[in-house]
Amino acid sequence: MSLGFITALRNNMLDEITALIDAGADGLVRIYDGTQPATGGAVTTLLAEGAFSTNSAPAASGGVLTHSAIGDEASAPNGGTPTWYRIVDSTAAFVMDGTAGTSGTDMILDAATITAGQTVSFNSSTITAGNV
Image 1: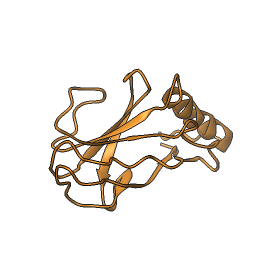
Image 2: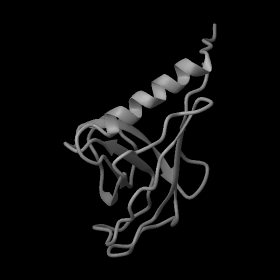
Image 3: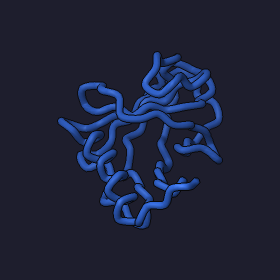
Image 4: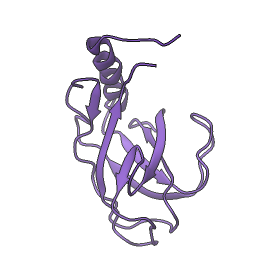
């Protein structure tokens, strides 16, 4: 049996993600290499970190949440292949995890590999709440 949700409910679920990211000061997105852990699990090597703007996303529309601009990482602390990301609020409390890469992933990055010291740009990030 599948579940179907009206668009308004899907938008409300996505807007709650925004509220959690925006709790306190700016939330952060952190890019890691290696295998993505179970939801909220122990992290691997941090490759880059970017800060969301004060309002991490406008209201969801059509069941899609599109994040506002994310600040670049000016100097990556470590090198590696980005495979997943974690979003935390300003106190580093877990909000969500997802896949990261240059295409076909939840978060799109500008480079397939990251070298320590390089600038890392966050090109786009969307979350779609679908029916299951």
